[in-house]
Amino acid sequence: MSGSNRPVTVWRLLLTLLCLAIVLVVCDPIVGLLARRFYPEPPYILLDLPSFYGLDRFWQMTDAGQKPIVFTGSSMVFHGVSPHVFDSSIATLTGKSVVSVDVGVTGQTSDIARDLVQNIFIPKGASAIFYTTEMRAYAARITLASYQRSPLGYIMQFEPGLRKTLGLWLLQHSALARYHNNIHDLLTGARPIEYGVGYYNVLDDRGHASAWDVQDATLSMPIPNDFTPLKIEAPYQAALTEIATACQQSNTPCIVVNMPLHRTLYQVIPTTELAQFRTMILESLGKGKAAFWDFNTDSCIAWLGDKSFLDRDHLNEPGAKKFTYLLAVLYAHQFMGQPIPAESPVDCAYRSS
Image (cartoon, rainbow, N blue to C red; front, side, top):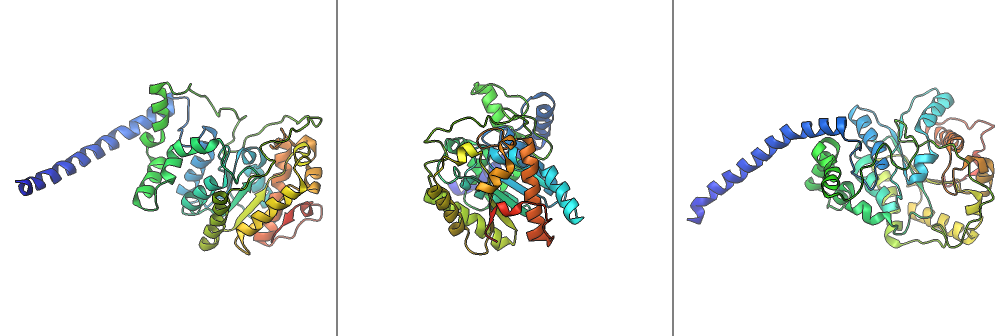
């Protein structure tokens, strides 16, 4: 009896899957149209709304056949790097055109960066990757739980294979998958609806957040703070090595950039911890796997000056323009064979290669 029922059961399963596919095909575009037209939030696929914009722009670029240069990191990259300034600087320096995009994640740690590099940036064909790192990125932060609960963070916990590939495809292409968290939070009242880009100032079309405020240079910095004492945990250090290995195996140029800090913060971090952090980066990357540019130095911080900072660890718009130009000069030199202009203060940075 059970054997005779098996074909019926299989056909019922197939019919159910077919009906589900038809519903998705019909409903998904409608959900997407209504959400884009009437719902004030973008898809909540990461741990906050602003983190969506750069990632979605990256997907749009690669779907259009472009191979963008990607800047990823924490909120420090949102404020500190302007893709438009980078692209125009490269054009001025070399006469060649590139296209770049900020794909930051608020509170990003090295394991989040690894997830993006291994599963999205490299597979989708990024032409180069800047990982703008910081001293807080190598130990668990309060953002970890939010990331793991987010649709993207949840999918990243799958083993490599069809399930993970399908999940990432749905997050890029399916409105029902992209707006799942928004709909859930709206129906359950889990949080208030957000508008625009949340707590950042205006985000441009490449994911850069512009802010024109200036840090009060007289502010004192308490100890301890979230930069010091330095915390380095093994899984996060290993994630940096995995980034470098993935870049090497895919022949993708990768640069790890230690972001500059305001002098009031930089001066309270012990020199031993600064040296320990640099040594950890170099050991984790390994010889030849990825370049390391450290801008958190006395001379770089002095060159940027107090008026380049929004606060203790974020550059403002004038600072972002200065800093991004310096990145472009070094990139044009190391990866495009362009001589360094005589007036460029690139020697302020420590460079591994």
